[in-house]
Amino acid sequence: MTLLSSALLSIVDEAGRAVLTLTEGLARDEFLGSRLTRAEVLRQTRVLAAGTADVPPGVRERMTEVDWAGWATLRRQLAAAAPTEQGDALWFAVQSLVPATLLWLQVYRKNEPALFRIDC
Image: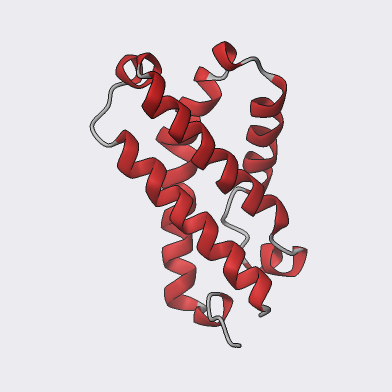
């Protein structure tokens, strides 16, 4: 794989871990009511979503279990919605999309390490 795709997968992984760390133990209402946490989770989720958009098609085809379409949908929702209307989409990402993506990245890292290797 290319340096670019390996770096993108690393960015996706790091942003996803940041999201999970920031939201650990928070209930939906606590999360939505926390202006600072929510803003940082939104920022990290946008980084993650942008990273998934830039992963090359050949890599996506090798990683079929990652919900690439779900990330594209979330990207559009976050771009189109006013900040006050992003809560449901963001909470879905926190509760479902991010954990599932990180799980699959872990599986792929174990089964296809070449996807994550950065060879300079």
